Length: 257
Image (cartoon, rainbow, N blue to C red; front, side, top):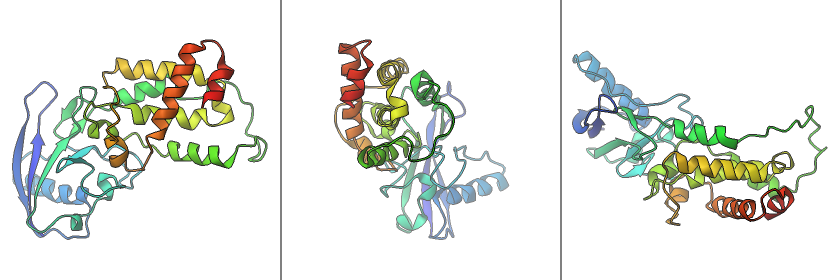
């Protein structure tokens, strides 16, 4: 398979970037998108050029670092996969593929296709954890958790923090990410103790980091590689409103989840 690649090249955050055209040929339809970029970079290195910088780690759909905007969609044309899980058979032979980094004020470009996603880390640092002493590790059946709550908590916890929701949102909102992190803790007994404090702090930090507001376009849910539902945003909004209206009354906030 042969492809024409139009790739965003930018030396560093303070330098103006531009789309640069490359061609690759003899690409197997069974290799991943990143392996195709590896082929391109080997080609560039052998020709004395600078390889394209892109972020990756596990290449197994777990780490969430593969932040690429491909043909106008986060992670490419296939739903429910990260960039590292995208294979070249998803494109037509001879296709022109546009590759860009995430576009968000909160995700400044570091170099080429690599962006700084540490804004998401700072949201977690603001309250995405359980700080109360819950004692030693209990048996699995010691603390009864309704199956519905357990299932919803597990679904929300599947978020890998890739930032596709931010990239897809017309307002570059991080509401789905923040809501997923708030939800998976608020639904479990150990996390409900600090539910009000957590949602206030994490939403405040999200705003400080420069993310936009949710306008219910549902683009975040459509492009999330883990299929996280926007119902987590509704849950977070209920918890946030209760935390504001009933400050100091943690039980009211817990019951609103």
